[in-house]
Length: 266
Ligand SMILES: NC(=O)c1ccc[n+]([C@@H]2O[C@H](COP(=O)([O-])OP(=O)(O)OC[C@H]3O[C@@H](n4cnc5c(N)ncnc54)[C@H](OP(=O)(O)O)[C@@H]3O)[C@@H](O)[C@H]2O)c1
Image 1 (cartoon, rainbow, N blue to C red):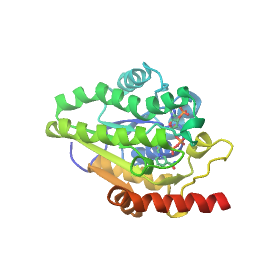
Image 2 (image 1 turned 90 degrees about the horizontal axis):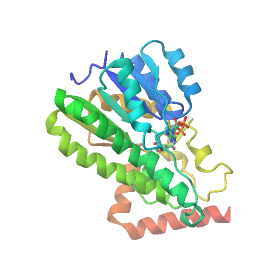
Image 3 (image 1 turned 60 degrees about the horizontal axis):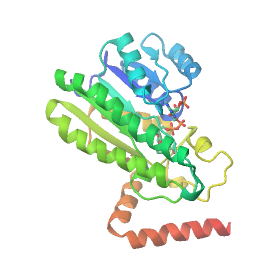
């Protein structure tokens, strides 16, 4: 695959019914690609496909179910033939202390954020390695880099996604498949917060200096389709914060503890 040219390539985007996924779909269409759009809300996908024109196709599926990933891949292949780029972006977190989460909520977060990405990859990778080209892009999170109170399960799923992507990169890289992981901080203009914390009760929120727009994240995704990179962490101060947590965990505990205490005091 020529590194910069996306025209005519097929991109399967999960989580395309809102937020980052919808913005990425628009950006890929502008770059000349064709997009298969996956999420549960078929009406949203149809509306976006209508807006984007014949190069976009709705492929609704519930990725939290065992058959969801295969349904999405089949619908994309039925319309466009092969899949050149997988953007594994669907995900959600439940912002709450672990003890306040049900077993079903824990399970669903792991299935949507991690298991679905692994299954989608398992389904599309053989075709990519056989052709000697392809791109796999995984949208992880700051919470997968730095343990975040109230996002333990979500963060664990995203950290698992990073480990998975690293291994797949080493397996598939020699066969011409570029594998990238994108770890954003907080992203404004998405439905993430509404689903994570419907009543606005959580003690922890993303600080303003870690906030991005959906367009910024979408551009980062498209850039990775053009030119894969092992990991992109945005905005850049987040990389420093993640390094702090890795190398000076006691200091990170203190910083996060203070932030929580300040918030609790109001
Ligand atoms: N917003 C942030 O601050 C932030 C920060 C870092 C990373 N991220 C990550 O960015 C990705 C996109 O999130 P977003 O911020 O754009 O939030 P969003 O607006 O809530 O989008 C999440 C997308 O995932 C889809 N999804 C959720 N559950 C699904 C399921 N069971 N099956 C299929 N699709 C499902 C949703 O569609 P349906 O509801 O229609 O199924 C929606 O399209 C997620 O992986 C998230 O973890 C977000």
